[in-house]
Image 1 (cartoon, one colour):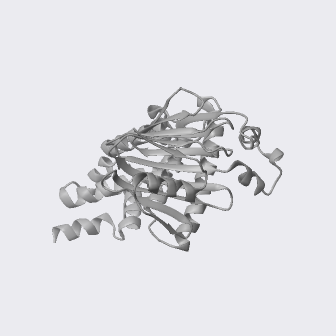
Image 2: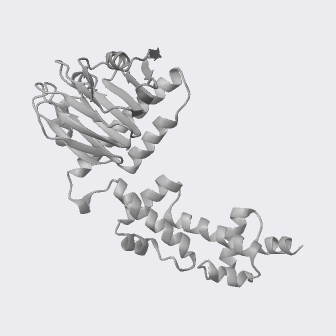
Length: 338
């Protein structure tokens, strides 16, 4: 196993150390440091940047030929690490513990090593890894707050008041759909220069916010939790499949949510995130698309089509059809015939 001892917490020093260990050149642009792995070590890239508010953003997108351990062993107070595994799986150990934590895709962790410890992150060989880490410098982050630390919610105060790293913190959870959306935005933003730095800084802080909200939500009973998680996505996708396959017999939102085992609020939020639409709006879109298909591909009468898509008012159907397509269904049928 390739073991890399990292004795600093600054993004610049971390990336330079990794460039030395992997035998690659490092680059810097607008404060963002990065390396590309040489073919002898694998493939992919690593980047890191620190922002004035004490938040640092690291991105790992790589595939290694040999197992690797990043041993964060600085004698400084270690930052909180908020880790998001997008693809692949990793392992983690606190340096003063033998317990190993496995972190898989779709999962996130908050790591707070105590002042006597550090973090070991183990990367497997021959596996695609896509990982984002937010480092939060404890003292810098607290110093830039515009309000007294004591005014924080108690659950957040317990984290950020520990500026001297007296306690060990480990919180393992699935990340939320909003976090997944932000992670995708971070990965797909290709503009360079000041725009990239500003975008990454804003999104890193937004991602941190959602992680803290998820941490707070995790402290509640399951039935009281309101944040959409990855396991909720499966339930929402089941509702989508049910709508698409049974458009003529779709129930109301309450029955769809109950059958899927998810709250109406979560179901609606999921549709907003995935489709930028309400559940009812999505159902109407699918109905009108199916109606157009029947108009063009079958000889069903308009009344039969209204019934086939689960509506009972021909006038209402004609109204919403024209609003979507600019022409009434009669015109589409006439155009087909001519």
